[in-house]
Image 1: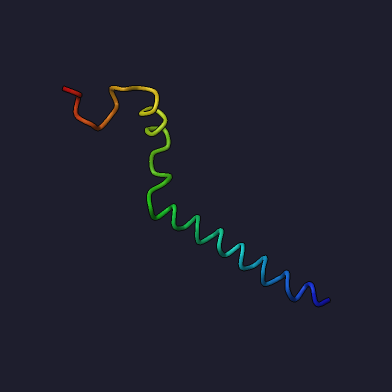
Image 2: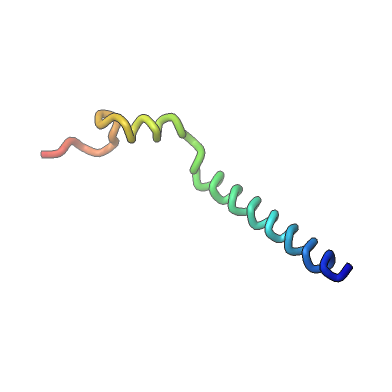
Length: 53
């Protein structure tokens, strides 16, 4: 019974930590444009940088 008193708060804490990490990535814009990021990796003409000299 004592192990439940230890593991229950640990599991709730880890769940809260995971939720906080997910919300942090949402606020940072991590998931805003996944298709655009994939296209920028494959195609050079979609870069936001100026062309090389």
